[in-house]
Image 1: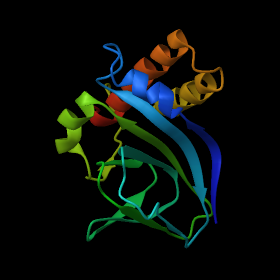
Image 2 (image 1 turned 120 degrees about the vertical axis):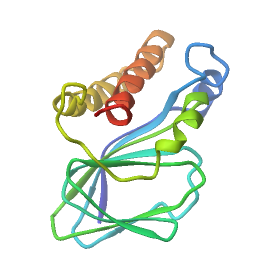
Image 3 (image 1 turned 180 degrees about the horizontal axis):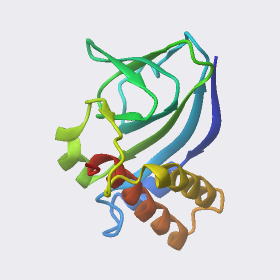
Image 4 (image 1 turned 90 degrees about the horizontal axis):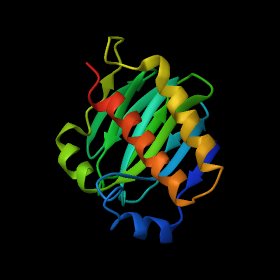
Length: 171
């Protein structure tokens, strides 16, 4: 069983505006979710992704399949699956496994693609905001419930950029 405990999707009309807005066209959030996946369950969207997908495992884990590659994927690990790919995760014995996900796109996401598809560990360091990462997800969820007026959506995108940087540029 797969449960979307928290979920928010940006309306399509707003995404179209963001694609041309000079403040947001470089990187914009499309969807945010906290997904609980029961033990020994296959999770997949079964279609090629239209956007990039960040998957952050906060509990449990399993085996991640991207193309024909099978990779162990567990707690405090993440990967970014590029648009155009199909993924599958077969969860292990932990019940439930918990994944925080973000679908995103924009001009900058194409530049960052070279760093995608590799499962990475989050090792604590000065630049690695592990403790604040879940707090940033919570901040995004909280602000998405407040609506999509312009100033709020700009804040959401800046906050998302900060969150993404804690993954990609952590060392």
